[in-house]
Every structure is written in structure tokens, then in C-alpha cells.
Image 1 (cartoon, rainbow, N blue to C red):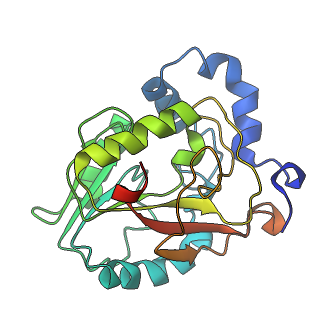
Image 2: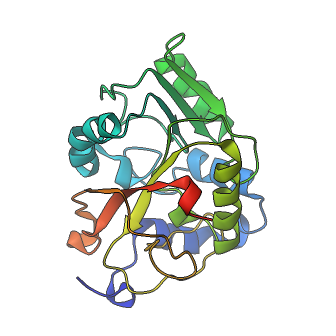
Amino acid sequence: MAFMDERPITLAQRNYRRDAEVLERMNPRERFTHIFRSNLWSSGSVSGPGSELAQTRQLCAGLPELLSRFGVRTLLDLPCGDFGWLSGVDLGVERYIGADIVAELVEQNTQRYASAGKREFRVLDLTADPLPEADAVLCRDCLVHLSFEDIGQALRNLRRSGSRYLLTTTFVELTANTDIPTGNWRPLNLRLAPFGFPEPLAILVEGCTEEDGAYADKALALWSISELL
């Protein structure tokens, strides 16, 4: 597997650099709303190419079994994005809460996918808003868009929520982490500094083919939130 500095930059990085001067005058909510409205990630899914069906097939197959194995009955999916790839998956949970910082996305998802008593959508900022307690928090393709400071705030906020597990994106072969302004993108290996997460309880390798397989080590990994801070 290539080291991070040998990997090609992604579409998200290229497009962020193009609009960086405008984006970095915005607060995070405005920034992600602009990314949504402008389809900055230039994908069939406004959540980016990583949320297209071609990149999520292995997750669709493996996620329900993982949730069942760890007794997950309530799932908070933050950020839920456009809910496209998960909309056809039977997660086997009793309650699903999808949340996103972009209010327009939440409104669209509510109209399309909400189900009384079983599936709901809320506007939430992972770094700042009080979060509902859940058995697990699915936080796919999120921390990779946040600065180190905002990741720290998100982790402390998750701890305050009382939720049990965090299921989040990590790149298992990455050899070093770098900081970015929130809204940009880079891979993260959460086992490394400045995070130092322990060995995960479970890993779902995604089978990522973006940039000709340069990010094939992309995975969802499960940790107990109480062990992270």
C-alpha cells in the first residue's frame, strides 16, 4: 500500500482547493451547505463519490451483520448525507436516527425516507449539538473532512452523548495523519497520532476503488467510545 504522500489527490481535494478562498470565509455549517448546493464533490451522490453504490456494496452486505453482532438496536448515522446507499439496506435495528449539519439534506431525507417510530432525520452538528444516546454512532466519511481541533470536539461530544460504540472511517495502512481546514479532505488512520485509538473491535474493509485503488485500505472500524478519551 502506498504511503499517504504518494497517493494521488482526490476529486474532493482538487475541488476544495479551487474554492478554498470562498469556503474558508464560511463557518462549518455554511461551508458544508455550500458543498451540498454546489455539488462540490462532483458525484452522482451529493455526499460524494464514496457514497455511490459502486463504493458501498461491501458495506451494504456486511453492516447489518456487524450491527447484529454487537447488539445495536438504536443507530445514530451522523452525517447521514443523502441516505442514498443506506436507503435500500435492512439494518436490522429498531430505531434509526439520521442526522446532518445541512438542513436542506435533512428536509429532503425526511420527505423521502422517514418512517414514524422507526426512521427519523434531524439537523445536528457532530462537534457542538447535544446528541441523542444510541447503541452505535455511524460516522462514515466525516472525520476525514474535519480539522484535528474539530475532531477532538466531535469525540468529546460523542462521549457526552452516552452512546456506546463509534463506527467510523479509517485508512488502516496510512503512515501519518495531517491537519486540514474543516471542509477539505484527507485520509486518516485513527490508530496514529494525534488520536491513538486502540485496536478496533471490528473492521469492515470497504473495497474502495477510487483513484485506481490508491485508497483500498479504507475501512469502517468499530470502537467503544468510552475507550477513546
